[in-house]
Length: 430
Image 1: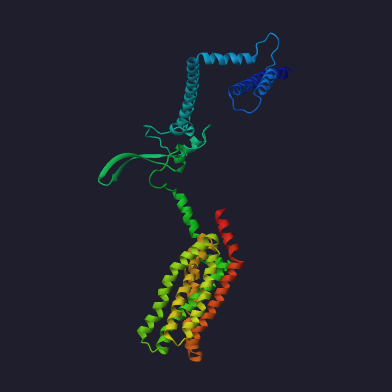
Image 2: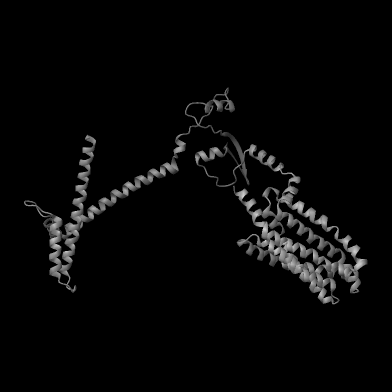
């Protein structure tokens, strides 16, 4: 009960102080408002009426009782004193302003220096640390056993080893003796040190662990990850189709030009390779740049670039296999090379988008091995077709393979890529 009475009396006192200040500020504001109406001549209203209303309001707020001095009178008296001694008022107000400003500045400077000392000069963590050494005692050594005893002492939370020794440092043409200290990452974090030049050396245990983890990736697992990931499997099939057509083209196209256009073997070999690879070289720049732009919004668009490239090359394959005009055949070579660049520019990017990073190299090896293994049959197949249906028909029929591969990539883009992409990236982010 006594506590409540004391609290109540304190609250009443605070309320009276707040009320007094509020009344004073209200009267001061109304006083200046009244003076404003006295001085102005431009207000198109009845100033005397407004001044009378302000006087009544001030009297009500003042609440002066009999025998008390009116607060309004005190305000008017203070204003008269300020007017009569203007220089004194300016000096007094200026002195108070400078005094308050100086006090605020010094207090702020003190707090700022305190924070500077704590954060820069003497960190709080350092105040909780001590350096322990063996001194000049030659019979004792600071080893793991001693560190274990120290860490078991009351109040000790952690022991961080540091090895110091004299070293000779050679830099350019200068040689100097200096004291070197070897520490680990915990020590650097504890003392708040920053590495200005060079890199932080890892613990040998961490290196061994990383090597062991890297060795755990088996080549057989790369086959499994390819066949368990629908997008990677379809990409591998499409890559195999690409290599099959390219190998068949590279093998039999010089023979086709030699037999159908009466070229020499050297001319047939040059013309069959030059135009295709020239426009593939040009196309790879355009395809790579454009694919990177569209892939920023949607990574799956790379698969579509590959599919569209294969499908766009189909009429050029038919053109170079069926035309009897040499210029048309060359146009077919150029279009074939330019269109295939859209597949080449995105092959490994698409694969790495759907395969975990630790399988990138081995999965690439599986895809390349499979593609060239399938492509190695192309010369044999075209060799069997040539005496029966003709080499022209055999080369044109290669377009069917790219139609199937292009459709397969579109299916992968529509149904599987997003799932495989999210699965890999969400797992690596976690």
